[in-house]
Length: 115
Image: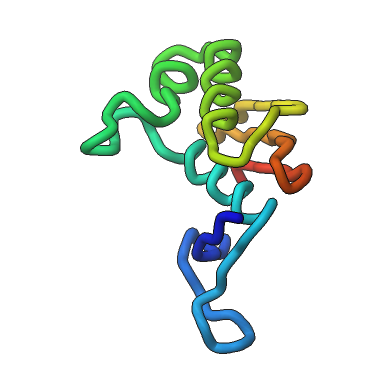
């Protein structure tokens, strides 16, 4: 079962009620990993420049929701522990691009959102 450092809404690690760094495991860990993978922009990782979401090419330079959807599903399915994508919805409102994905994992079902 994967265990990861928990992140708050600001993407910062924090201390749990026991005073130690908060950790996640199971479905919550997989969901956090999936969200992190969705937030990684293509070209920003020095040693994996071809990895990450092609957000610039599919959402900002030219809005192509079908390509964004396909890339997102591929990223989500490539997350360790994810076995399927039940649904993926996205919408763009001005300069905001939001999505909601319902994923199935080896531990259960989780929802991953951009917010």
